[in-house]
Image (cartoon, rainbow, N blue to C red; front, top):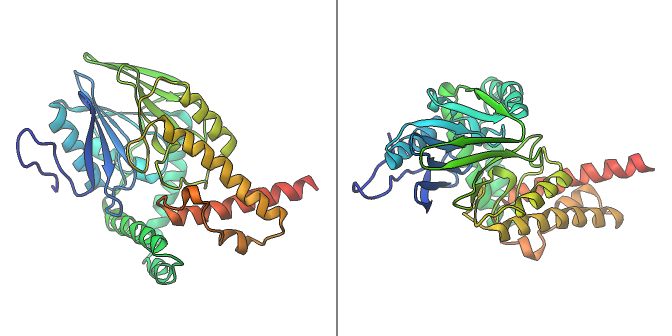
Length: 325
């Protein structure tokens, strides 16, 4: 076990994440990038049990998360809420074998089908990651090279964990709202539909004005558009802005506020405009993928995802233009 604590009154430490106390009985587990955790998580003391929001990428990271949660609260983990089906948020589910796992119905279906397909493919054709070595060596900027090294570190940890990885499906599903009542606080699992993926859930603590938003929010991180519907994503973020939230925990990046939600909404619109204007100018896909980030996003992390987003938007918008002709 890699988790440790220097003193009885010190928070547990882990090589996979650091803990940030957001309120009495509420912590964010912010990942150390490139270690095999990948997506942030949350810990909430309910009074008569503990809730964990998302379960990280690898069993080792998830074990540290469980150990930390139970050390901090003095109570077993009784609930896990999964935000969506991507592996960096659900691969640790099996470590919480005696907890009740909760997500939306669509996300459960995607874990069962798409999650199983991805895991099977990785086991059948493990990647030796040499392609990333080449990408790092040829990276256009030091920032891109650094982001690719982070990605490489997470994938190395993932492939090393493949022999022990097992999918653990959620036990309870909901569609729009599920309230969990503890003896010390109540929390709400909410879903406004799909934006980042076909179905996204988040956790809202009304009394503390805290929301764990999963990948609906990235703070100063380029969010992945791979399975996204940008219009619905923007509508979901608009609804989240209407909630009484003071602290917003993203799926990736540091703890933020509603200002970061507003910044992401601006990013979604700016990215679509950037690619649309390039298409109108007659630029090729290769030219568009090579476009530098707008100044407002030049310092954001996950630069490799920015490039993927340009490619995704080009394919989407070019196809829409062809269909309109």
